[in-house]
Amino acid sequence: MNARRDFLQKLTLGLGLTAMSDYSFGSVANMQEPTAERPLRVALMGLGGYANIVAKGMQECKMAVITGLISGTPSKLKSWQEKYNVPEQNTYSYETMHRIKDNPDIDLVYVITPNSLHHKHVLQVAATGKHVLCEKPLADNAQQAREMISACEKAGVKLYVGYRLHFEPHTREVIRMREEGAFGKIMHVNNYMGFTIGDPTQWRLKKALAGGGALMDVGVYSLNAARYCTGEEPIWVTAQESKTDPVKFREVDETITFQLGFPSGIIANCGCTYNFGHSERLHLMGTKGWAEMVPAFGYGPIKGNTHLGPIDQPKVNHQTYQMDGIAACILNNEPDPNVTGQEGLKDMIVIDAIYESIKKGGQKIVINA
Ligand code: NDP
Image (cartoon, rainbow, N blue to C red):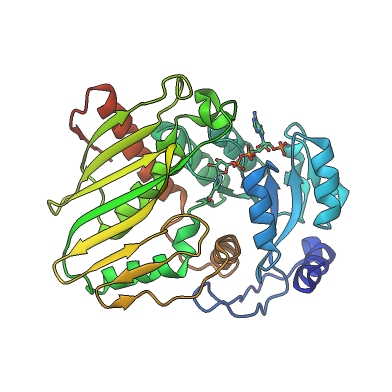
Protein backbone atom coordinates (compact mmCIF):
# COMPACT_ATOMS: atom_id res chain seq x y z
CA MET A 1 0.00 0.00 0.00
CA ASN A 2 1.07 3.55 -0.75
CA ALA A 3 2.45 5.12 2.43
CA ARG A 4 0.72 8.48 1.98
CA ARG A 5 -2.64 6.84 1.33
CA ASP A 6 -2.16 4.57 4.34
CA PHE A 7 -1.45 7.58 6.53
CA LEU A 8 -4.41 9.58 5.17
CA GLN A 9 -6.78 6.67 5.51
CA LYS A 10 -5.81 5.82 9.08
CA LEU A 11 -6.14 9.47 10.00
CA THR A 12 -9.49 9.98 8.36
CA LEU A 13 -11.18 6.75 9.36
CA GLY A 14 -9.91 7.09 12.89
CA LEU A 15 -11.16 10.64 13.31
CA GLY A 16 -14.68 10.20 11.94
CA LEU A 17 -17.11 12.78 13.29
CA THR A 18 -14.60 14.27 15.65
CA ALA A 19 -12.41 15.47 12.77
CA MET A 20 -11.04 18.97 13.20
CA SER A 21 -12.66 21.90 11.47
CA ASP A 22 -9.47 23.92 11.01
CA TYR A 23 -8.59 22.91 7.44
CA SER A 24 -5.50 24.50 6.01
CA PHE A 25 -4.28 22.46 3.07
CA GLY A 26 -2.17 24.18 0.44
CA SER A 27 -3.92 25.34 -2.71
CA VAL A 28 -3.75 23.32 -5.91
CA ALA A 29 -1.47 25.93 -7.36
CA ASN A 30 1.37 25.19 -4.95
CA MET A 31 0.39 21.63 -3.95
CA GLN A 32 1.91 21.83 -0.46
CA GLU A 33 1.81 18.98 2.00
CA PRO A 34 -1.40 19.00 4.03
CA THR A 35 -1.24 20.53 7.45
CA ALA A 36 -4.83 19.91 8.54
CA GLU A 37 -6.12 17.04 10.58
CA ARG A 38 -7.72 15.13 7.75
CA PRO A 39 -8.15 15.03 3.95
CA LEU A 40 -11.35 15.14 1.90
CA ARG A 41 -13.07 11.75 2.24
CA VAL A 42 -14.44 10.54 -1.07
CA ALA A 43 -16.85 7.76 -2.03
CA LEU A 44 -16.64 6.60 -5.65
CA MET A 45 -19.94 5.69 -7.34
CA GLY A 46 -19.82 3.39 -10.39
CA LEU A 47 -16.68 1.26 -10.39
CA GLY A 48 -16.04 1.12 -14.13
CA GLY A 49 -13.20 2.10 -16.46
CA TYR A 50 -12.79 5.72 -15.47
CA ALA A 51 -13.31 5.04 -11.74
CA ASN A 52 -10.27 2.74 -11.98
CA ILE A 53 -8.19 5.60 -13.38
CA VAL A 54 -9.47 7.99 -10.73
CA ALA A 55 -8.79 5.51 -7.92
CA LYS A 56 -5.26 4.97 -9.17
CA GLY A 57 -4.62 8.72 -9.43
CA MET A 58 -6.01 9.24 -5.94
CA GLN A 59 -3.27 7.06 -4.47
CA GLU A 60 -0.95 10.05 -4.94
CA CYS A 61 -3.38 12.64 -3.54
CA LYS A 62 -2.20 14.85 -0.71
CA MET A 63 -5.63 16.10 0.30
CA ALA A 64 -8.19 13.49 -0.77
CA VAL A 65 -8.67 9.83 0.03
CA ILE A 66 -11.10 7.07 -0.95
CA THR A 67 -13.21 6.12 2.06
CA GLY A 68 -16.37 4.76 0.42
CA LEU A 69 -17.62 2.76 -2.58
CA ILE A 70 -20.99 2.50 -4.34
CA SER A 71 -21.55 -0.17 -6.94
CA GLY A 72 -24.24 -2.37 -8.44
CA THR A 73 -21.77 -5.24 -8.68
CA PRO A 74 -21.12 -7.00 -5.32
CA SER A 75 -17.91 -8.67 -6.55
CA LYS A 76 -16.43 -5.25 -7.40
CA LEU A 77 -17.28 -3.93 -3.96
CA LYS A 78 -15.39 -6.85 -2.45
CA SER A 79 -12.27 -6.53 -4.59
CA TRP A 80 -12.13 -2.71 -4.41
CA GLN A 81 -12.68 -2.81 -0.66
CA GLU A 82 -9.57 -4.95 -0.32
CA LYS A 83 -7.52 -3.09 -2.92
CA TYR A 84 -8.22 0.36 -1.52
CA ASN A 85 -8.56 -0.56 2.15
CA VAL A 86 -12.16 0.63 2.47
CA PRO A 87 -14.07 -0.74 5.46
CA GLU A 88 -17.08 -2.89 4.60
CA GLN A 89 -19.48 -0.58 6.42
CA ASN A 90 -18.55 2.15 3.90
CA THR A 91 -19.62 0.12 0.85
CA TYR A 92 -23.07 0.53 -0.69
CA SER A 93 -25.27 -0.59 -3.56
CA TYR A 94 -27.37 1.95 -5.51
CA GLU A 95 -30.31 0.78 -3.39
CA THR A 96 -28.60 1.34 -0.02
CA MET A 97 -26.61 4.47 -0.84
CA HIS A 98 -29.15 6.74 0.88
CA ARG A 99 -27.60 5.49 4.14
CA ILE A 100 -24.47 7.49 3.33
CA LYS A 101 -26.21 10.39 5.05
CA ASP A 102 -25.39 8.71 8.38
CA ASN A 103 -21.76 8.00 7.50
CA PRO A 104 -19.29 10.53 8.94
CA ASP A 105 -16.42 8.97 6.96
CA ILE A 106 -17.71 10.41 3.65
CA ASP A 107 -17.62 14.11 2.66
CA LEU A 108 -18.16 13.85 -1.10
CA VAL A 109 -19.53 11.31 -3.57
CA TYR A 110 -17.91 11.16 -7.01
CA VAL A 111 -20.53 10.07 -9.59
CA ILE A 112 -18.77 8.12 -12.38
CA THR A 113 -21.75 6.32 -13.91
CA PRO A 114 -23.05 6.51 -17.53
CA ASN A 115 -24.08 10.02 -18.60
CA SER A 116 -27.85 9.62 -18.46
CA LEU A 117 -27.68 8.39 -14.86
CA HIS A 118 -25.88 11.53 -13.64
CA HIS A 119 -29.10 13.47 -13.06
CA LYS A 120 -30.69 10.73 -10.94
CA HIS A 121 -27.49 9.94 -9.05
CA VAL A 122 -26.63 13.57 -8.25
CA LEU A 123 -30.15 14.12 -6.87
CA GLN A 124 -29.74 10.99 -4.72
CA VAL A 125 -26.36 12.15 -3.40
CA ALA A 126 -27.66 15.65 -2.67
CA ALA A 127 -30.42 14.05 -0.57
CA THR A 128 -27.73 12.47 1.64
CA GLY A 129 -26.28 15.90 2.43
CA LYS A 130 -22.87 15.09 0.91
CA HIS A 131 -20.98 17.19 -1.66
CA VAL A 132 -21.06 15.86 -5.23
CA LEU A 133 -18.51 15.68 -7.99
CA CYS A 134 -20.18 14.47 -11.19
CA GLU A 135 -18.42 13.28 -14.32
CA LYS A 136 -18.86 15.02 -17.66
CA PRO A 137 -21.18 15.66 -19.36
CA LEU A 138 -22.98 17.01 -16.31
CA ALA A 139 -26.39 15.88 -17.60
CA ASP A 140 -28.37 14.99 -20.72
CA ASN A 141 -29.51 18.58 -21.18
CA ALA A 142 -29.64 22.02 -19.55
CA GLN A 143 -32.96 21.39 -17.83
CA GLN A 144 -31.54 18.40 -15.95
CA ALA A 145 -28.40 20.38 -15.08
CA ARG A 146 -30.53 23.18 -13.60
CA GLU A 147 -32.44 20.65 -11.49
CA MET A 148 -29.16 19.18 -10.23
CA ILE A 149 -27.80 22.61 -9.29
CA SER A 150 -31.04 23.50 -7.55
CA ALA A 151 -31.12 20.21 -5.58
CA CYS A 152 -27.55 20.74 -4.39
CA GLU A 153 -28.23 24.35 -3.43
CA LYS A 154 -31.31 23.33 -1.45
CA ALA A 155 -29.31 20.59 0.31
CA GLY A 156 -26.50 23.05 1.08
CA VAL A 157 -23.89 20.93 -0.71
CA LYS A 158 -21.42 21.76 -3.47
CA LEU A 159 -21.77 20.42 -6.99
CA TYR A 160 -18.69 20.04 -9.18
CA VAL A 161 -18.22 18.61 -12.67
CA GLY A 162 -15.22 16.44 -13.61
CA TYR A 163 -13.46 18.99 -15.84
CA ARG A 164 -9.99 17.73 -14.88
CA LEU A 165 -8.19 19.96 -17.41
CA HIS A 166 -8.89 23.04 -15.30
CA PHE A 167 -6.30 21.64 -12.86
CA GLU A 168 -3.82 20.62 -15.58
CA PRO A 169 -0.74 22.90 -15.73
CA HIS A 170 -0.48 23.31 -19.57
CA THR A 171 -4.17 24.21 -19.79
CA ARG A 172 -3.90 26.56 -16.84
CA GLU A 173 -0.87 28.20 -18.46
CA VAL A 174 -2.74 28.89 -21.71
CA ILE A 175 -5.62 30.38 -19.72
CA ARG A 176 -3.17 32.48 -17.68
CA MET A 177 -1.42 33.75 -20.81
CA ARG A 178 -4.72 34.58 -22.46
CA GLU A 179 -5.93 36.44 -19.36
CA GLU A 180 -2.66 38.40 -19.20
CA GLY A 181 -2.96 39.42 -22.85
CA ALA A 182 -0.01 37.42 -24.22
CA PHE A 183 -2.01 36.50 -27.33
CA GLY A 184 -3.53 39.98 -27.75
CA LYS A 185 -7.19 39.95 -28.73
CA ILE A 186 -8.32 36.39 -29.46
CA MET A 187 -9.43 36.26 -33.11
CA HIS A 188 -10.11 32.58 -33.76
CA VAL A 189 -10.26 29.24 -31.97
CA ASN A 190 -10.18 25.81 -33.58
CA ASN A 191 -10.64 22.77 -31.31
CA TYR A 192 -11.20 19.12 -32.12
CA MET A 193 -11.61 16.03 -29.96
CA GLY A 194 -12.39 12.50 -31.04
CA PHE A 195 -11.42 8.87 -31.19
CA THR A 196 -12.50 5.67 -32.88
CA ILE A 197 -15.03 3.99 -30.65
CA GLY A 198 -14.83 0.19 -30.39
CA ASP A 199 -17.40 -2.29 -29.03
CA PRO A 200 -20.70 -1.56 -30.83
CA THR A 201 -22.73 -2.87 -27.86
CA GLN A 202 -21.37 -0.41 -25.27
CA TRP A 203 -23.60 2.08 -23.43
CA ARG A 204 -21.90 5.04 -25.16
CA LEU A 205 -23.74 4.06 -28.35
CA LYS A 206 -27.13 3.77 -26.63
CA LYS A 207 -29.05 7.01 -26.36
CA ALA A 208 -30.91 5.98 -23.19
CA LEU A 209 -27.64 5.74 -21.24
CA ALA A 210 -25.37 8.14 -23.15
CA GLY A 211 -27.79 11.00 -23.85
CA GLY A 212 -26.03 11.49 -27.18
CA GLY A 213 -22.87 10.44 -28.98
CA ALA A 214 -19.52 12.06 -29.68
CA LEU A 215 -20.79 15.51 -28.75
CA MET A 216 -21.83 14.45 -25.25
CA ASP A 217 -18.73 12.40 -24.62
CA VAL A 218 -15.86 14.33 -26.20
CA GLY A 219 -17.39 17.35 -27.96
CA VAL A 220 -17.74 18.81 -24.49
CA TYR A 221 -13.91 19.16 -24.44
CA SER A 222 -13.83 21.17 -27.69
CA LEU A 223 -16.68 23.31 -26.43
CA ASN A 224 -15.41 23.89 -22.91
CA ALA A 225 -11.99 24.75 -24.36
CA ALA A 226 -13.55 27.27 -26.75
CA ARG A 227 -14.92 29.00 -23.67
CA TYR A 228 -11.60 28.97 -21.82
CA CYS A 229 -9.65 29.97 -24.93
CA THR A 230 -11.81 33.06 -25.47
CA GLY A 231 -12.94 33.89 -21.95
CA GLU A 232 -16.34 34.60 -23.51
CA GLU A 233 -19.70 32.85 -23.55
CA PRO A 234 -21.15 31.90 -26.95
CA ILE A 235 -24.25 33.81 -28.05
CA TRP A 236 -25.11 31.71 -31.10
CA VAL A 237 -24.40 28.29 -32.57
CA THR A 238 -24.55 26.57 -35.95
CA ALA A 239 -23.84 22.84 -36.29
CA GLN A 240 -23.68 20.00 -38.79
CA GLU A 241 -23.64 16.23 -38.30
CA SER A 242 -22.03 13.70 -40.61
CA LYS A 243 -22.78 9.99 -40.35
CA THR A 244 -20.79 7.47 -42.36
CA ASP A 245 -21.89 4.40 -40.36
CA PRO A 246 -25.64 4.63 -39.76
CA VAL A 247 -25.74 1.11 -38.32
CA LYS A 248 -23.17 1.55 -35.55
CA PHE A 249 -24.33 5.10 -34.90
CA ARG A 250 -28.04 4.39 -35.22
CA GLU A 251 -28.93 5.96 -31.87
CA VAL A 252 -26.22 8.58 -31.34
CA ASP A 253 -24.16 11.13 -33.26
CA GLU A 254 -20.96 9.99 -34.96
CA THR A 255 -19.23 13.23 -36.03
CA ILE A 256 -20.33 16.81 -35.38
CA THR A 257 -18.82 20.14 -36.39
CA PHE A 258 -20.05 23.30 -34.76
CA GLN A 259 -19.40 27.00 -34.86
CA LEU A 260 -19.74 29.23 -31.81
CA GLY A 261 -20.32 32.97 -32.18
CA PHE A 262 -19.05 35.15 -29.32
CA PRO A 263 -20.03 38.68 -28.22
CA SER A 264 -16.72 40.15 -29.47
CA GLY A 265 -17.63 39.00 -32.99
CA ILE A 266 -15.20 36.11 -33.27
CA ILE A 267 -16.19 32.59 -34.26
CA ALA A 268 -14.78 29.33 -32.90
CA ASN A 269 -14.79 26.35 -35.24
CA CYS A 270 -14.99 23.10 -33.29
CA GLY A 271 -15.74 19.45 -33.73
CA CYS A 272 -15.81 15.97 -32.31
CA THR A 273 -16.02 12.41 -33.56
CA TYR A 274 -16.45 8.78 -32.57
CA ASN A 275 -15.13 7.55 -35.89
CA PHE A 276 -11.52 8.58 -36.44
CA GLY A 277 -8.47 8.82 -34.25
CA HIS A 278 -5.56 11.24 -33.94
CA SER A 279 -8.00 14.08 -33.50
CA GLU A 280 -7.18 15.89 -30.34
CA ARG A 281 -6.10 19.48 -30.73
CA LEU A 282 -6.62 23.00 -29.44
CA HIS A 283 -5.57 26.03 -31.45
CA LEU A 284 -6.14 29.65 -30.51
CA MET A 285 -5.03 32.63 -32.58
CA GLY A 286 -4.80 36.21 -31.38
CA THR A 287 -3.60 39.56 -32.68
CA LYS A 288 -0.23 39.14 -30.90
CA GLY A 289 0.31 35.38 -30.95
CA TRP A 290 -1.03 31.87 -30.78
CA ALA A 291 -1.18 28.67 -28.73
CA GLU A 292 -1.50 25.12 -29.91
CA MET A 293 -1.86 21.97 -27.83
CA VAL A 294 -1.62 18.51 -29.37
CA PRO A 295 -2.68 16.36 -27.59
CA ALA A 296 -4.88 18.76 -25.69
CA PHE A 297 -7.62 16.86 -23.89
CA GLY A 298 -6.63 13.29 -22.99
CA TYR A 299 -4.89 12.17 -19.81
CA GLY A 300 -1.63 13.42 -21.16
CA PRO A 301 1.07 14.15 -21.33
CA ILE A 302 -0.42 17.31 -22.78
CA LYS A 303 1.97 19.06 -25.15
CA GLY A 304 1.77 22.67 -26.18
CA ASN A 305 3.50 25.46 -28.08
CA THR A 306 2.97 29.18 -28.34
CA HIS A 307 4.49 31.98 -30.41
CA LEU A 308 6.82 32.47 -27.42
CA GLY A 309 8.01 28.85 -27.39
CA PRO A 310 6.99 25.51 -25.89
CA ILE A 311 4.65 25.49 -22.89
CA ASP A 312 7.05 24.36 -20.21
CA GLN A 313 4.89 22.85 -17.50
CA PRO A 314 5.15 19.64 -15.47
CA LYS A 315 3.51 16.44 -16.62
CA VAL A 316 1.07 15.55 -13.90
CA ASN A 317 -1.55 12.94 -13.17
CA HIS A 318 -4.80 14.72 -14.04
CA GLN A 319 -6.92 12.77 -11.60
CA THR A 320 -4.54 13.41 -8.68
CA TYR A 321 -4.52 17.13 -9.41
CA GLN A 322 -8.27 17.30 -9.89
CA MET A 323 -9.03 15.57 -6.59
CA ASP A 324 -6.48 17.59 -4.62
CA GLY A 325 -7.80 20.76 -6.28
CA ILE A 326 -11.40 20.04 -5.34
CA ALA A 327 -10.33 19.05 -1.83
CA ALA A 328 -8.54 22.39 -1.49
CA CYS A 329 -11.71 24.24 -2.51
CA ILE A 330 -13.89 22.40 -0.02
CA LEU A 331 -11.51 22.09 2.91
CA ASN A 332 -9.93 25.53 2.65
CA ASN A 333 -13.12 27.21 1.49
CA GLU A 334 -11.15 28.51 -1.49
CA PRO A 335 -12.99 30.10 -4.41
CA ASP A 336 -14.42 27.49 -6.73
CA PRO A 337 -12.49 27.04 -9.98
CA ASN A 338 -14.25 26.65 -13.33
CA VAL A 339 -15.56 23.22 -12.43
CA THR A 340 -18.81 24.03 -10.67
CA GLY A 341 -22.26 22.80 -11.61
CA GLN A 342 -22.81 26.23 -13.18
CA GLU A 343 -19.87 25.62 -15.53
CA GLY A 344 -21.33 22.25 -16.50
CA LEU A 345 -24.69 23.96 -17.11
CA LYS A 346 -23.10 26.55 -19.44
CA ASP A 347 -21.85 23.74 -21.66
CA MET A 348 -25.18 21.90 -21.54
CA ILE A 349 -26.96 25.05 -22.76
CA VAL A 350 -24.65 25.15 -25.79
CA ILE A 351 -24.96 21.39 -26.38
CA ASP A 352 -28.77 21.76 -26.43
CA ALA A 353 -28.36 24.51 -29.03
CA ILE A 354 -25.97 22.39 -31.14
CA TYR A 355 -28.46 19.51 -31.29
CA GLU A 356 -31.26 21.99 -32.09
CA SER A 357 -29.23 23.48 -34.94
CA ILE A 358 -28.56 20.01 -36.40
CA LYS A 359 -32.23 19.12 -36.14
CA LYS A 360 -33.07 22.33 -38.02
CA GLY A 361 -30.61 21.67 -40.84
CA GLY A 362 -27.75 23.78 -39.51
CA GLN A 363 -29.86 26.81 -38.68
CA LYS A 364 -28.31 29.51 -36.48
CA ILE A 365 -29.56 29.14 -32.90
CA VAL A 366 -29.36 32.13 -30.62
CA ILE A 367 -28.42 31.17 -27.09
CA ASN A 368 -30.39 32.62 -24.21
CA ALA A 369 -28.40 31.65 -21.13
P1 NDP B 1 -17.82 2.35 -17.71
O1 NDP B 1 -18.88 1.66 -18.49
O2 NDP B 1 -16.44 1.82 -17.77
O3 NDP B 1 -18.25 2.39 -16.16
C1 NDP B 1 -19.49 2.87 -15.75
C2 NDP B 1 -19.88 2.17 -14.46
O4 NDP B 1 -21.15 2.70 -14.04
C3 NDP B 1 -20.12 0.67 -14.61
O5 NDP B 1 -18.96 -0.10 -14.50
C4 NDP B 1 -21.08 0.39 -13.47
O6 NDP B 1 -20.34 0.25 -12.28
C5 NDP B 1 -21.87 1.70 -13.33
N1 NDP B 1 -23.23 1.58 -13.86
C6 NDP B 1 -24.36 1.82 -13.15
N2 NDP B 1 -25.45 1.61 -13.89
C7 NDP B 1 -25.01 1.24 -15.11
C8 NDP B 1 -25.67 0.87 -16.31
N3 NDP B 1 -27.02 0.87 -16.40
N4 NDP B 1 -24.92 0.52 -17.38
C9 NDP B 1 -23.58 0.54 -17.32
N5 NDP B 1 -22.90 0.87 -16.20
C10 NDP B 1 -23.60 1.21 -15.10
O7 NDP B 1 -17.85 3.89 -18.14
P2 NDP B 1 -16.72 4.97 -17.89
O8 NDP B 1 -16.10 4.75 -16.58
O9 NDP B 1 -15.84 5.04 -19.07
O10 NDP B 1 -17.58 6.32 -17.89
C11 NDP B 1 -18.34 6.70 -16.75
C12 NDP B 1 -18.51 8.23 -16.75
O11 NDP B 1 -17.23 8.83 -16.66
C13 NDP B 1 -19.15 8.80 -18.02
O12 NDP B 1 -20.03 9.84 -17.68
C14 NDP B 1 -17.97 9.34 -18.83
O13 NDP B 1 -18.32 10.43 -19.64
C15 NDP B 1 -17.04 9.78 -17.71
N6 NDP B 1 -15.63 9.73 -18.14
C16 NDP B 1 -14.86 10.83 -17.90
C17 NDP B 1 -13.55 10.86 -18.28
C18 NDP B 1 -12.72 12.05 -18.00
O14 NDP B 1 -11.58 12.12 -18.47
N7 NDP B 1 -13.20 13.02 -17.24
C19 NDP B 1 -12.94 9.72 -18.97
C20 NDP B 1 -13.82 8.58 -19.11
C21 NDP B 1 -15.12 8.60 -18.72
P3 NDP B 1 -20.81 -0.72 -11.09
O15 NDP B 1 -20.79 -2.10 -11.67
O16 NDP B 1 -19.79 -0.50 -10.06
O17 NDP B 1 -22.19 -0.28 -10.67
